[in-house]
Image 1 (cartoon, helix red, strand yellow):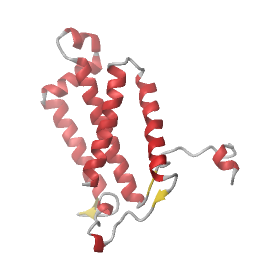
Image 2 (spheres, helix red, strand yellow):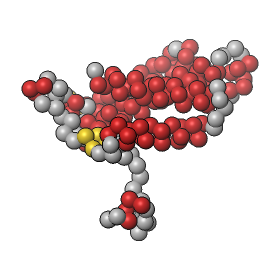
Image 3 (tube, one colour):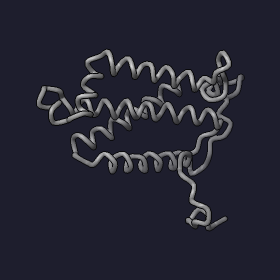
Image 4 (cartoon, one colour):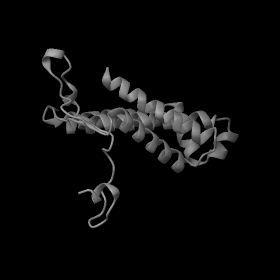
Length: 171
């Protein structure tokens, strides 16, 4: 259930990005970067700036199994690799064998020509952002499973050696 909720939240954030880009004409880089900071801020508010450790669960509460994504392996291959193979195979099938995939290629190749040929480019772009958000959420769930803990600051680049920031000055 947690995995489905996480992926749905990622898809919803992708939909917000898509709406910002298509309906409000915000530059894609600015929209996605802005929503990144909004989502990171909400995660920090929710967690109080802390880390949720030991996400493996306990058998007494029947909430074990989250470590399957990032730690366990099937047939000697990590589960996260199987997930990536399944997502890549699905992407290949969708883009090569469905009208939606052809529309994605058309909008990505020449948006104006796709629009003139009758493709609803706004819908296709929003769908692409939704899919991208769901994939990003899946990647975040895999990372969280591998680390066994969740924190709103995961994925933040570290400062360069010798570079001083407000967080390193306290150290």
